[in-house]
Image (cartoon, rainbow, N blue to C red; front, side):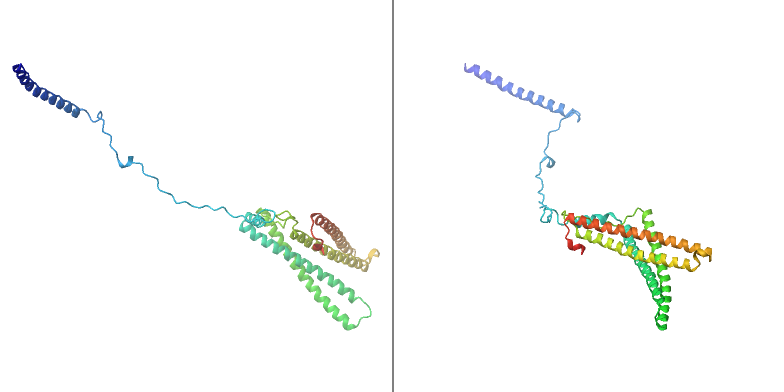
Amino acid sequence: MKCNRLIRARAMNRVLPMLACATAVVLLISLATQAQQPAVGRQKSPRLTTDDVARPPAEQPTVDVKEPVVKTDVSGKPADAKASQASSADAKANPEESAWRERVDKARDRAKESQRLAEQAELRITSLRNELGTSGETAKYRNETAAELDLAGQRLRELRAAAAEAADDLSRLVEYGRQNGFSEAAGPKPTSADGTPNDEYYRAQLAKINEALEGAQRRIQLYENRVADISQRILMNGGKKGGDNFYTMQLQQDRDEAQKKLDEARAELAKAQSDLDALKEDARRAGVAPGLFR
């Protein structure tokens, strides 16, 4: 038995080195085979890079957004509504149109004032003529009146020329605005932003109507004087009995023109009076204080 164990031990000692050598050979062959494989077919071992590491997002600074504060009136409507409406209306007009509006306003005022002065000068001349024809006055008074009448006549010619020039300037400006699509600025509205009556609107309308009333009354007096004066000259020229027929025809045409202007002035006065009554009634219904029309 002891001899058999010795034999097996020796056999194992021989076999084990042979197995170890065979295993090493197999391992070397396997490594060599893998090294000869092409790079395309070879799989790389996964590697961890810094790009694969998730970085925490940087903290963004917080910004406090405040809501705009809107001022309101008692009714709860924005207090700046009226101002914003006015500014938006002005913003619609470009600088050229705004400048044109200012020029038109000034030209219209100049034309109205020039016409008013010319009409007043003509009324003054008629008054001086009536004074000159009054009997019982002294020679000195007559001479002074005649001298004043001459100066008034010169002044009237100058004022009429200025009125015609102002009217032409206004017409050219209005035509220029029409060709460029400009519009004049709108006046105040009947009601304010909060729905209450706008006193400024009624004051503006009242001023326009009063101006129309005064102008119509002045022109009525002026053209009545013209009609009477021309009629008197027709009689002095001979009337139906003869005289200079051509001159008489010219006077009759002038009288017809003056009569036409007189009828227009009377119609303007009637319309202005009707407009005034309508404005007062509208203001009464809107609740405007009656003192505004006093």
